[in-house]
Amino acid sequence: GPSAEDIIISPQVVVDCVRTNSSHGCFGGNANDVFQYLYDKGMTDDSCKPFVSKTQKCGGEGDCTVCNAEAPFNCSAVPEGQFRRYYAKEHGLVKGEDPMMSEIYARGPIECMMATPRIFEDYSGGILCDTTNATN
Image (tube, rainbow, N blue to C red; front, side, top):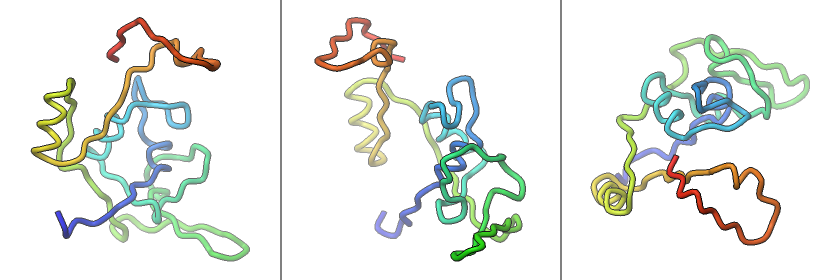
């Protein structure tokens, strides 16, 4: 609604903490795993845990850090309870055009994913013609 906050969840928490059979930090993953983590455990925002382009330890004192803006750029942990975690109220999966339209009508924007069969990994240019009809 109009009073909703515009929060950017920390991509670093996603890289550090979302680990499943299909999510592997810097090596890719599944958006639904991120939503499940956000639902179960919550995440800090980007100002609390900025992206550093490498995998760090998940959880504990490192969930939120503050760093000096000038050299030396020392960082220190913010104690639990002194920073905010954001949670998903609900999440789920829908497949197909009509269910997607219904979800948008009922609750607003949705996140979309697409299947990426092996042919996408081997792509080297030109028009890609996938005949696998992959849905996962």
